[in-house]
Length: 281
Image 1: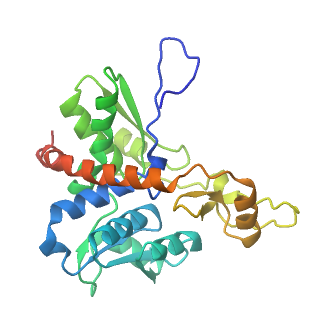
Image 2: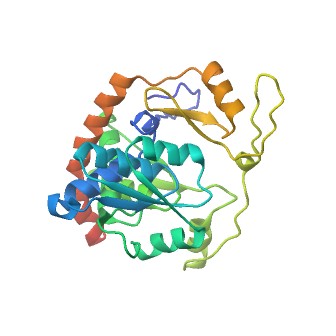
């Protein structure tokens, strides 16, 4: 979508991944990893470690493929996120934060069978994310730069790999929040570098009910809507009620279904990107 911004010598477009069935790009990586794994690898189901979006992506794809899904979440995961996982057919397994994080580091959890889909550090997941770049180049003839949010790095790595292959002239920038920028610090130091994390304003978000009586300190989360999308709000009942009454839902069930199917099949295009990532291209 072209952004109607009055900026000299610049044309800005937005890639609206919030229109995915789960409201996030995570669906791409999950779909690609499971599609490339094959039926035998999926025979015992799938599982992942995530507090939110990747969990929903894996659960959504598992439901589409008719396989079981388990999700390891940290104990403090927002109820709105765990409810969304269960609504998609996933089984939520709560563990202390240290165990949840160790699952991500180990690429698996002892005692759980099935294919582990890593939330970001997986070549098939990165390749699935790279389909975003392919679609950008399909829609636009000349792309000077792509700015990508940086969290675990799986999104920007996939997009960068695809961009290098499809449009070498295009620059790809990883964008970090100033209060949590390990990539910037690590690149400057030439090695992985720990940084101090500072909570952003969203952690101090106070919900606003119509009566003005609710002042909970719950972190900003998401509220499910009837068509499977979500919108911002806190986790208390008053805020949820207020959001449903005052927030206009932009999602449409049939449109989401079409987009979801299209994105799922487009992810299959990325098998070649996995080779590019593996070879370091």
